[in-house]
Length: 349
Ligand code: GDP
Ligand code: MN
Image (cartoon, rainbow, N blue to C red; front, side, top):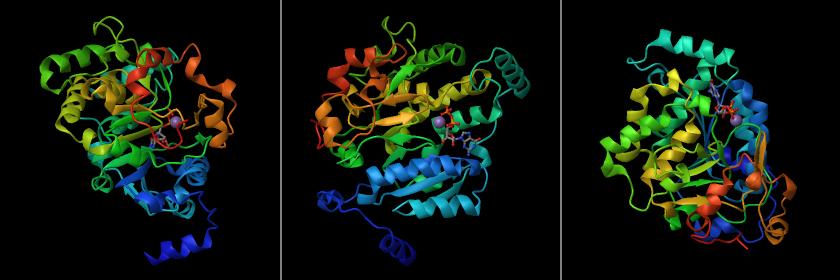
């Protein structure tokens, strides 16, 4: 609208080296952030970096979602920072509450027990609703329904390098459905029966398991056990139609029925990652080396000095987590041909 046009006039736009948005036009895509009102200042930092490093040249939309109404400060601050249109969505009770088959007493006892065992977020009820929402519902929010691709951004992240190409367009043109920058091992205590649940799904729905999938990223023994590798889902660029597909929804429903979002503390990262590895062909998953990224406590700093200099990265390559002990990069390396070398785009050198 006219308000947005005025705003863009008043924001000094650094001229892009070669007006990339103009070259190909935008893809049908949006940034998406789940946040609380209290996250506003940490989120402001994230938005500013996403804008400076990428979106000021593209003006993609940004959807904000919350289980409580956003306040005026949140809306004012974020809409001033985003160069595209901003939308603020309230999450329906139906998508942020206990399904009827969950025994809430049992869930409460689990939280008490996991709290005593000092398992990260083990005692938190809201964190469980958050993980279940990110696993099964954000892509079905009415504000998300008209988009084809999403880019998830969390409060407090950093982007270390210029993004000299449009990752959304890259995803679309190369038929990628899911992408990541960091992979690591999940805490076993949060997912003890997740793989049992996944195996049950695989047995019940063989029709959804992709030919040429990447089960080898998840399991070192041919599918018997889960090696706990997952893509870190606080950064994600993905295809929404895939998440809304029958295959993904059957997968989510099957897991949800088993109750592990509440009786354990299943994270959306392993849930998304396992789905990507089983339901997609390996070529449909992409590793973005050239996107320098930080979310406490891990850094992905692009490999290759030329890449870092060309993209004006400000990360210390020694902080790169890819090769450290707790990283699952080893598994990614084994699968390198599949995740890294498929498709090339400007910014890869
Ligand atoms: P961590 O990255 O696993 O430590 O978890 P975060 O605290 O960063 O939460 C993940 C994402 O969900 C962030 O974008 C948070 O802003 C958001 N989030 C977490 N809990 C809630 C909640 O109770 N309500 C809302 N609206 N957002 C939440
Ligand atoms: Mn976070």
